[in-house]
Amino acid sequence: MDKIITEDGSESFFNEEFQESYHSKSGAVEEAREKYANAIKAHEVNSPIIFDMFFGLGYNTAAVIDEIRENNNDSFIEIHCFENDENILKKVLEVEPGFKSYKLIKEFVKRFLDSDQRQFTKDNINFLMYFGDATRLIRDVQDEANFVLFDPFSPKKHPAMWIFPFLKDVNNKMVKGGILATYSCAKEVRKNLELVGFTVKDGPIVGRNSPGTIAVKTE
Picture (cartoon, rainbow, N blue to C red):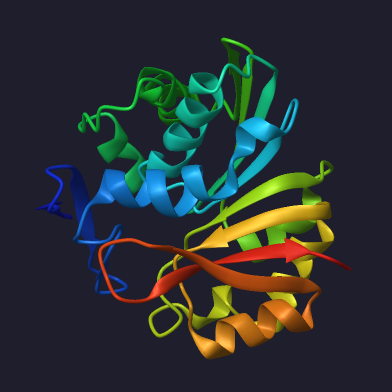
């Protein structure tokens, strides 16, 4: 797995199977902070439940934790992390992206890799790892998310993640008014999000001319 240094100096990697990098080349950390953490404003919810789909290097989760704590929200946080590639999780232990909470991310991932520990609680944050096929695992989740960080490979490279059945399952596991953030603004993606019960609007423009998407559960 080849390392990529993005334009903000942060590290990402190139996935050979999908022939795509894990983050925007304009800046991996910038993308996590602007398209996800600052876009959803999770600090405005007390004791938020967050689904990270998909975890990868954990940058989106780390950015959201930092955003919550930096805005003086010290409430309990629960993060459900979906991933199916052990190779990218191993890279978590090698990178230093500069998030204040990344030490926790590393500890969580190391425990999972070393001993298959799928739940880890520390500093008033509960992490849960769902390792495997997210299209099946999402149905097993008991909690309902306030926020979903939706960050699979692109619709062209991994279309199964962007189609009606899976997006409907994700919607079903969210509270009414819950927010899903994603980098894609593809017409078909937005159409499917609307079909399953979201209202969509433009998300931030970061590193390119097109915005991301913010989807709010209305049904």
